[in-house]
Length: 254
Image (cartoon, rainbow, N blue to C red; front, side, top):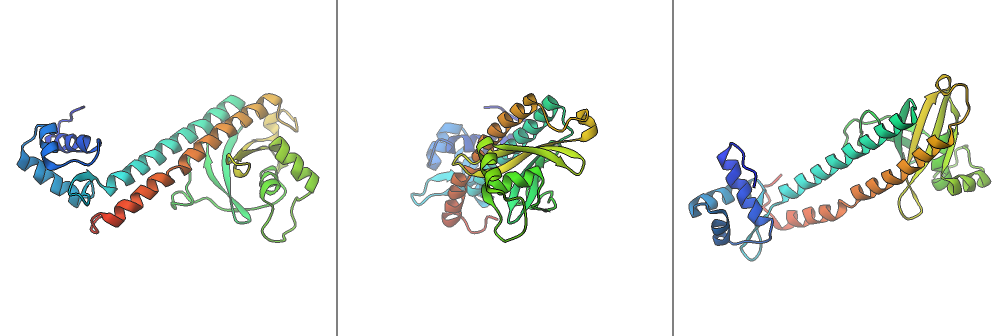
């Protein structure tokens, strides 16, 4: 095990390394770590107060709920970094001005990530302004899958919606910007998000559409992003474990 220059941290990590293997009694922790029994007992009690360790109904030590929350935070951070790298790589490959990832919020849409930063509406970090659905390419993709919950006038031609679902993308001009919007599936035939690439018309050499190479790169990126979003959603299993430990763990842990 890697050692730091802080002895007490090394001892705490040695204890946690034993608990990684499963519920363990005090004697086993002592024998596995080589630490004095009094040292192990003192550290375990302190770690229990911090939520790093707790005692199960059989009286054995197990990892605590704070470690589960830290694991969830680490998983989210890694997923966010990988997503940002994906968007940045797509921008570099295609040469577009901007790459964004948007999700549905009622009859509006919110940018949750771009190639510069990530935003989380759920956690309240870096909130992004909601934009109403209209007739731009991104809205067309959302509407092709999900329509509107109310009766606002919007792009809703049935044949066009069917064609968008079959093709998986739409491109067009909105506010002097050429936009390519690609569906990010949820794995079950539904829509998880929309990936958009945009560039001012002057950067596209007066062309009114992106070439096949750009469209293909965006479609492939959307497929990878779909996989990443499903991995993020799988943290629900870890969340369930966290809820369980909160029910049986010490009430003092925040």
